[in-house]
Image (cartoon, rainbow, N blue to C red; front, side):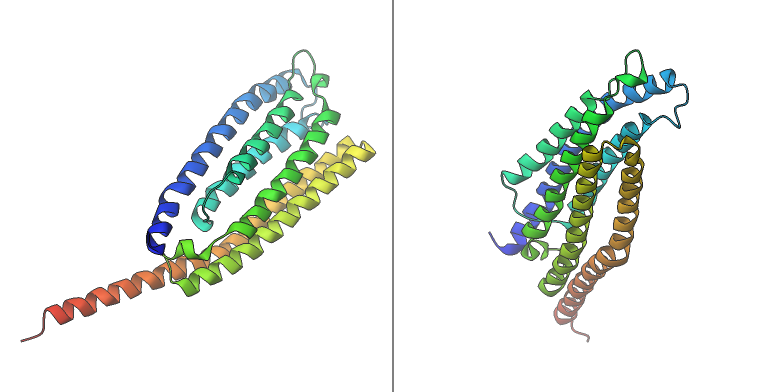
Length: 242
């Protein structure tokens, strides 16, 4: 199997399978979270100022962040899958299910165990940073050669590695900050975690749109123009002017 065939194989199947699994898992998490949010709004006397709101909102952002980054990854990331690609998504999802168990609301908003949730929150962030670093380590330029030249593929990998390395360290920082919250028992500091996560999403999207995406599109356009040029040359040789 030639390199182009390998690129086609990974490009056509790996991303689709990965995103399908993550979409299923995140959909289950969201389906279990929504009833807790509804019950919270029914029972909270001042829902917008209650500290119990923070874990619920953060949980929503975690779901969105995970799905969004995996959805983006099917375009910009490629490698041959192995057991790591099974372990990381399921470990993250298991951590999410543990987090959900602390957000059940029955008779009072105080049913939400914020302290226990914060511990799980720190764990899921620390697990998440390894997903980013794993992308840095395993990204393979050879598997992009069906949509761009090898030279552009190498450049894309360099740019993408910088992006995911920075994102990984950002999530690692958030995980360490969450551990600090647990250690100091400062539940209200979860507001800072909320702000950090929103900033992470905004900055990562900005970096993606300004750095990774432009070169990626440009590289694909260049390959398409090169292919079209070859076709035109072939057609002109096959149909000489009279």
